[in-house]
Image (cartoon, rainbow, N blue to C red):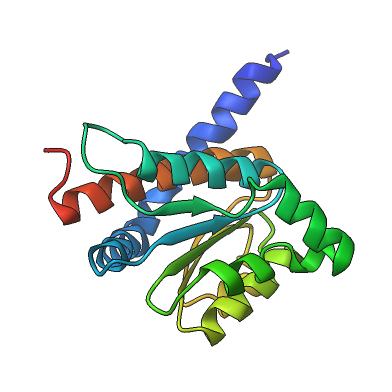
Length: 190
């Protein structure tokens, strides 16, 4: 019997083989995100669970550094302020934890990256709706068939798989690629 690790590795490699089809969407998103930052905007990230961790990880690649030393870029994870999350969740609802932050911190010309392996996370959906109403570019980093977010976002990158762990692995590859594209487009870290 094949070990769990080898089965997971095989599933991962099979998914990686089909991700090449996403190259046009990834390239276009990287260019758009670089344009947002070049114009003085910020990139906000939101998601739940593992997608919350990915939000923090990718925001830190922007404010810290990714490949080489360069100036910090405006990346903000809306998943990290426990006081805001619990206050908003308690006083309003969990569906509003990202929406209220987008409304308070976002400005027209910014970007919001909503990360959801199902494409149906209620609080991410509401945040995207609020962002669009404010003139904020919305990008979905999604899985499965893209869910409701696939059609709602200005642009979506959908990992076509049904296993959450594999989708998250692909999201990290795509997220790192976006960070690299941003640096390249902006002429940073060379």
